[in-house]
Image 1: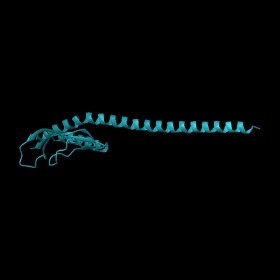
Image 2 (image 1 turned 90 degrees about the vertical axis):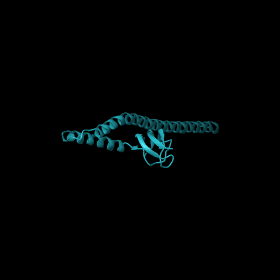
Image 3 (image 1 turned 180 degrees about the vertical axis):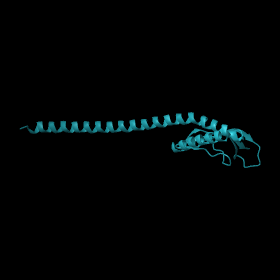
Image 4 (image 1 turned 120 degrees about the horizontal axis):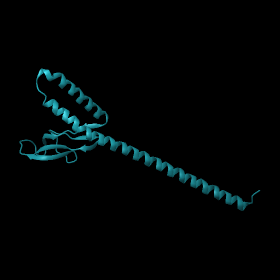
Length: 151
């Protein structure tokens, strides 16, 4: 049977081991949280890169529709391109992409990039024309809208 001194040493060792175990468990939990956060950021970054690469394709298709000949022979082609545009827009929306509002809005340097100041009868600082659409992904601006602003 251990004497009191040995018992006290064993208790101290047990407390030390318990404290070390608790510290290791806390360190592991912090590591897991940090790893989860980094993984989430990596997924968001990859998603952002993908969306930024898809946007010019969408805009090219929209441009093709605007410039499509008004000839009945091209109507089925235009309908097909329109369906592709709608599918892309729906997919982007589901991914958390939203178009930044422009015309009629007050200029906001966080959302808009002014490419020209124009004399206008409208309110100073109001956006009067969109030059290029801007987009947000999960409320983060991934491309500011290029706009013309009233002086």
